[in-house]
Amino acid sequence: MKSIEDYVHLEPKYYEAVLQNYADLFAKQIAQLNHNITNVVIYATGSSSNAAYGALPFMSNILKMPVKIEEPSIAENYLLHVEPNSLCIAISQGGHSYSVVKIIQRLQDAGNTVFALTSELDSPVGKVCQHVLNMGMPIEEMPYVSAGYSVEILDLMLLAMLIAQKTGKLSSVEFTQILAEIKNIVQKMPEVIKRASSWVENNISKFATAKRLVFIGYGAAYGVSREGETKTTEAVRISAWGKELEEYMHGPYLGLNPDDFIICLDPMGKLHDRMELLKRFLNKHVKNVYTIYAGKDENATADDLSLGITTSELLASLFMTVPVHLLAYKLSQVKKIDLQHSAYPDFDQITASKI
Ligand SMILES: N[C@@H]1[C@@H](O)[C@H](O)[C@@H](COP(=O)(O)O)O[C@@H]1O
Image (cartoon, rainbow, N blue to C red; front, top):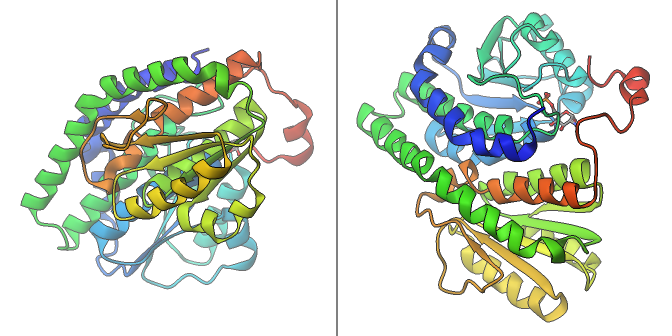
């Protein structure tokens, strides 16, 4: 079975395939779309939800309409009041998540059109949903996903661009410009992976002593911070937080421990200065504060990681998760955690959380 690291190295290839095929992958379904959509609701859980948060600021900016993300279980049980002109998108990479299958059924039964994004077309999600969107990559064998999370971000961005074009919100010229910016990022992915691998290698012995990792991001990097929490919890099995910058400053900072390892995720956008202020505070109280920058920052220290891509902050989630995934993978190796076999084989037998 391929490892998380193998899949991270496959990301440029998968991105290129999606960029080549996106029109075929999505065109037929987009053609059936209601032209009068007024808002988008995304239903996803775990890494798929984190990916949606990574794409959210870009989608909102391009579509110029409300875009929100809902936890499928809460939506299905308590929030089933969807506006008639909502575009409902359910995401499940593997297609077996119980709560995602349920919300698709409930929405369809109530007369809503739902588009489901998945890599497994004959999965329960693929079978139950009337409008299936193929993610455009092979099924990821490793259950602790990395490439699929990234491809979901790209898929959502491209979907938003296609829908914006169709509804007259994005001109062909703008479409081509953004596509060129995305292609530029994809070309630089091998260099991103190289820099991220060296950073992880250089710092792994220190990170291996961490009792808790705290990921703090803003904008598109909020999705990255959430993915840091998910992957560290699931693959490293130590405590982890993934917070939005102001959310962290609102109260969670009071729970900081001097031995926390804090990773700030800076896409070098609107809230860069706010993040600098938080770091000024954190550096007084915590020894291990790291920053991962999308580009190169003049304040970067030797412990920080500059990924070297100067781009719109809205696109930063396409590459900023690479070091986060590699760190989780390497830490799981150091801790000798077997990611290929289920830690609790009885879990799904009892709960049927995956069907
Ligand atoms: N532990 C897994 C997560 O790692 C995964 O991200 C999530 C969503 O999976 P999917 O995108 O296939 O619905 O399911 C479970 O919670």
